[in-house]
Length: 412
Image (cartoon, rainbow, N blue to C red; front, top):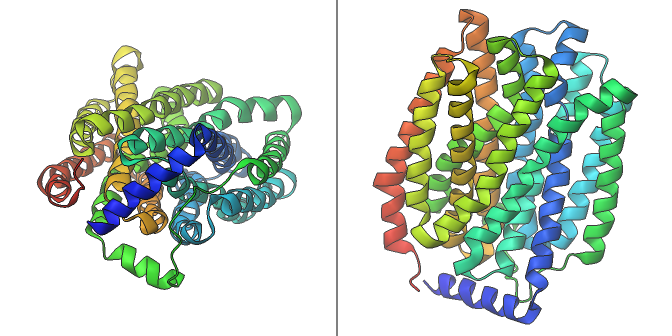
């Protein structure tokens, strides 16, 4: 409880001393998250093109889009812990500059073979670690009663994947394969400079003194770390899985063109992005576990409906967009839960572990869907598995997480 009181006091004083400054920090951090996620998602819209160029199997295509996801996910664990220690002002420019290298490699050199794409995609995962920088950075600037909304607004930066979906294929068709990668590298460099000049860590931000390994071990012993990880693996993992695999799914299941499938994926992403702050805002008022329960029910219903491959208009569109809204709101609610329950000096470490679980949750489904389609020529079993996993998460939320928040959450 003393850690909870320290967290509230520190955040209140930070917000008070900065006046309107916290909102500026939130805005710049959100832009950074969006830019890095734009880079992180560059391969997904081009997966169909690379499949045709390199004669890839459905599993190889799924692997191509999944590799950046898993690296960006696992990398969040050390990056979150490093952010606890060095702060977002150092880590945001560092991650952005590091991401430029694989972006330029893929655009200029590494797109002529599957092996080269996988190497580039591996290091492209660095961009995905930016999430673990922003959550502790934003969390420290806001008092508890506003953290759900603030972290939800930051989380809307995941809309960087929509930027990639809307622009990548068009830029390649108009200017060649290098164009979207060079443009993204330039934007990353500009953001790194902006972040260094503008970002400031919150006053009285708790800086841990323990070694990184010890802090990670402490985070792993917290019950909320594992509970939130399981929920985020379903909520954000489902979002990531759809955002990277939906173009392939729509092209295969409904015969859409590459451009049409990419545009519909962008609509899915945009709705999920808009609903993430809503999920955080509702969690501030209703409690994150209630919001999570509602969103998981929607995911179960949408996945079961889509398992029958209904006509895309209107039933398929309704099912997919309902799941987009639910996964976005559920992602916002999960980190409202982390902001509520994680100790102040462990937010980055907990965020890293939870964010890794979410990204890994997005790594597995594309591989499963590709393998299932390759074996059966149908996606129904994969969508039924999604409904089963969402049901398990719902039971965890109702019977375990809700009880933890009642027993351990600070009052007031």
